[in-house]
Length: 167
Image (tube, rainbow, N blue to C red; front, side, top):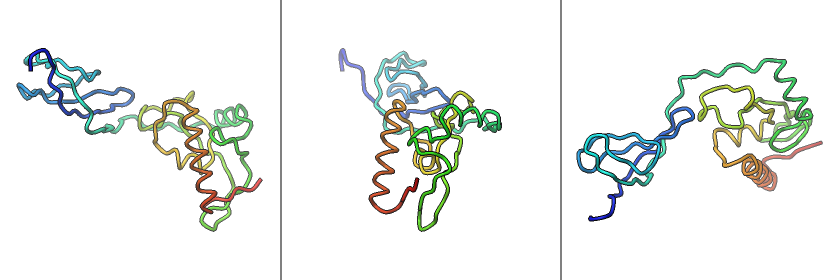
């Protein structure tokens, strides 16, 4: 293998807001943890590249902090008392699994708590239950991608008769 770096499998691990690549050196079997997929072994100095075979999120030691009533009112006022993701007004009704429910705000993290490990107040938005439950802990490249995913998902569920929204 002259001139080429060996390529081995690695595990992509997220620790809070940091992503690291965990691999085992093919030469000395030392475990390495790096920010990039091009790794230089800390033990024998071998340079190698990795391909991600598994993704894992380490549980955060942070605890969720409650969103205070004043902050909730500020968020709702900023959003015009509407869901951040689908823009439906809170107070309306929808039918789900044969039950009529009221659209009420749930306070959601734009970046899922599971990835950031912190309840940053600047990351909070008001979301309706359907959007919040379908977004769950999914990660998106940007807010537009998230909104598109949620609107497409809700449209699909409306077509399937799982949801009916009323004004």
